[in-house]
Length: 207
Image (cartoon, rainbow, N blue to C red; front, side, top):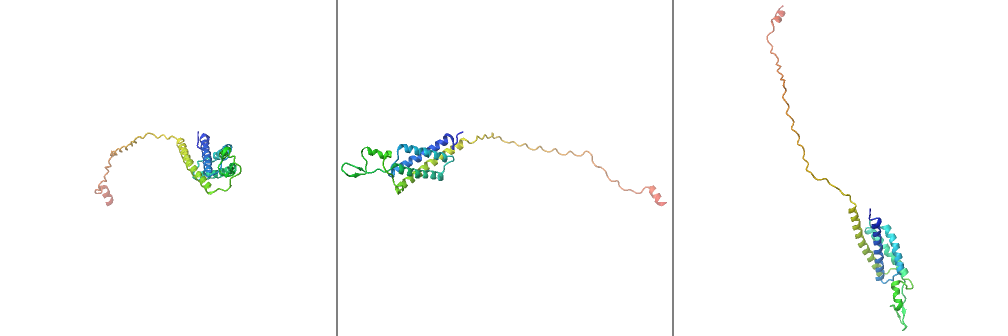
């Protein structure tokens, strides 16, 4: 049975987290004026990030965990981009002037990360703001997806409850008790009235 924490669904959730975190980190870094590493390095970073997200999505990711995951991912990716992206040196044109824009074959080095040198290790305010926005957007998007996936999974695995048909319960009225039959024998014993003493008794007393 497919569950959100394992199998194809779990791998899909991990892949979604890795792709969104990496894509928004690249966008934020580039928009803040940073340089991007070569494509091969980006692919390797995506694979490493997928390993981390696979371990993280064993449970439902909520806001606190999502902010930690996305925030640490943005910070780590920024450091790697800054170290491997490099900074492009000014190009000396034939007139002897130094210009910061690129020309000729050097123009493609920014996108492919072939510039020489490394960017400053410190994060400027603009770079920090872009990565912070990328973190919030990542968590806002993916936590909503997490809720939907887990809600759907809980609905699919809910056991089917079959309720019996409702039938009116007819209670039996208690049968009336039969009246007690009158007793057939009537006690007609009447104490005899005391009469005068018998003659034998009188003669005995006189003697």
